[in-house]
Amino acid sequence: MENLFFTRFQNLCRRNGTTVNAVGRIVGASSGSITAWKQGTEPRPSMVLKIAEYFGVTSDYLLGLDEKPADVLDQVDVAWYGQFQELTEEQKDIIRDMVAVMRKRKGD
Image 1 (cartoon, rainbow, N blue to C red):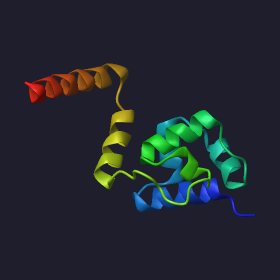
Image 2: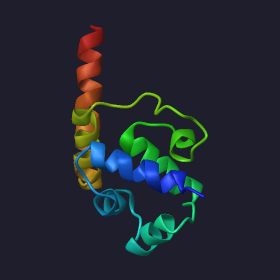
Image 3: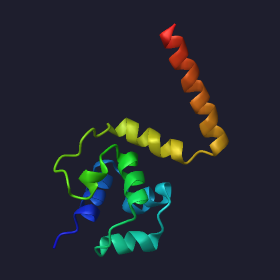
């Protein structure tokens, strides 16, 4: 039986020029977990959600419950999200504040 989760995870990585191990590090998955997924174990729901958010797809798509990757982000958005996740919490807060200011200015 095909392991849809790992196949889709691996394909999304390839399409976005990254690897399962690189994405795993970003979302907090151990190399042992990734090996288990490759062998057919499904990840915890919280991890599926993190990976889905990283790629801009639904968790249902990753798990094989949807055929199409709904709302796939473009590669620039995916790269930005990956870079954002690597920042410290303090740096993330600064960026969030900047975004809030920009949104407010846009609304004026």
